[in-house]
Image 1 (cartoon, rainbow, N blue to C red):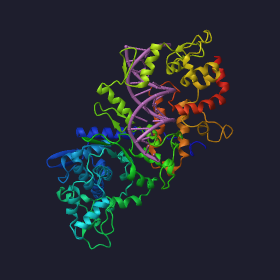
Image 2: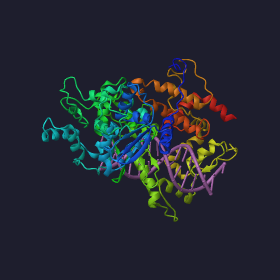
Image 3: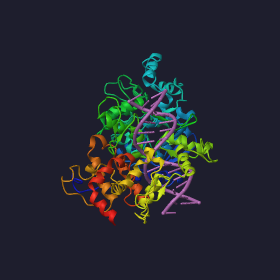
Image 4: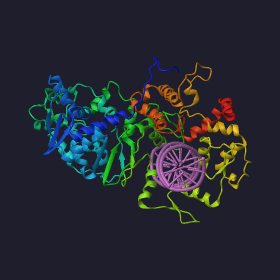
Length: 565
DNA sequence: CTGGGGACGGGGCCC
DNA sequence: TGGGCCCCGTCCCCA
């Protein structure tokens, strides 16, 4: 594969969207550049029209109509939304500016209603899922209980006020795409407001006269085959159809100019995309870094190949780093290492983790639990492996020996650090230690094997930091396939080549998630830039092991030269 | 530079 | 098959 077809190289700034949103939120909090004030029962919320238009179908349609009317959409305006509870409106605004929805379970219904009214579908979906609403069942019930010509508005009220049958103490919270606005399905919606009838139409009446409901809104409630009763299609319920029609946002999805490539996954996600939630008191939804479901989506995509069949059996291959992930259900976990998602938050200190089990261990810090006591002293530890390390102090065992200077260490990582630090100046001046009993333990055999073969040891140490397989990084055609690219640094080389490698995944799979692609790269390059040693890029252990031999073989001469220094 | 604690990601086992 | 739990290897940070 050649470099970028026209020589262009995309430089990712994955944090840009986060920072942008953060700055907008700061502006909102300080009232800076706010050109729209939302009010609800006396509470005032300064905000930005552009942000609201980006996140809300209602506002998009509203402001879009203004644009169409030549109003320019400029100027300062006030929008009264008494139909949305102040707390719910606050939560929705918080979501709009932080991509995270934080709401108490008790307020879920209000938020759901507000999201429905404002056309923030992902939030509505999430709330609905948390509330355990079953649209189909609801529809049946509604149809059974209500005459056909029932007022849709009152029907909506009934739906929203009716307690959910599956109550809210559900621990599992479905994660939805609440990430970047840029990643929201809303982003793909047609720009024309005509197709956006808003369920918030009733709130139009409370809008200031400077923002009359656009004619489009009336049109929105009309269907060519309808009798003109605008209420007929106002049912906001998900998947609910009235007279054969579906709510507008459900209709829009199939009409996307660039539909998400993972369409079958939508079903998948709606069925079983569930994550650990956070207690019954509050629910945290979303991610500050990515569309939270992307990891799961891509994870599923990597194995479904776009089909409808379920996820395949393990092992599964990561579509980003090509790494083979062993173990059932481990791929979504792995994908979070690329997306940066940390869905598990400590309720005590707010620290977030990518995995629930890590959070669980972390919680021991707050509970004071140290379940691993040393039998030889009073020390107690959070982790079993900490105890194991500690026990080596008592035993005096130092099974990890530098093959060059023969200095011994109690921990393997300390040996590695020692060698990477070029601190073993006494190479070959010390006599090798006797092989300790720990050699029986397979865990140390790597280090001791290195001792037996210093060349291989160096090869192992200086293996490639490549994120992708060597063949991919060097063009996918093997050593003789073409001229190798020149890079100023390993990081640059990796970044550029990884971009090419990602492109190999094809637009079908990744085009809709540019942030995802770029983040996967940034995760690697960024780590290096954050202060790690130059050229040292974290690579999954398995990957390191996998490439060690390749490097040893391909760079054998080079490594030998380095050894001779 | 080294020792030690903590964090993170992957794999295995089990339900 | 997915997910919880545990262990391991590795890395980062601090003293």
